[in-house]
Image (tube, rainbow, N blue to C red; front, side):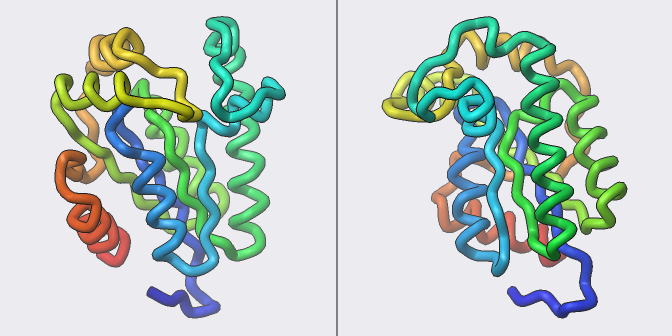
Length: 180
């Protein structure tokens, strides 16, 4: 897919509960879309706290105040990249629902074409995936996934993709939504 110079860049949000494959999908998108940068909330948080990506962070790194810092830094980077005409893909849970509204508003504010995609998988699949993580930037485990599901009470309006499909099928579905 190529972008004509007069077209606005994309701001693509890949959301879903921990273990849904957001980072993998966003990284694949970065490879498939020209001039695209991938911003990952877990890696941003680790940079803010000055630790290696695979170092676990303490609970105080996940307070609402710390999360606001991650959001502010992500917004700063989005503005910087969009201003230079680059596409941006953000991988984050985008929970609770106001965070989805906020990223859509950010896309509007920076005059980017917005695409929000939600990766959906059963709780049992998410549990298996987070238990298998080794050397990952995410600190989320089973308890975090349970909390995300319990606290997300609003219906997700973004198009959904079955996160249990083969990676090629997921990417094909995501690319169709972007080209849409």
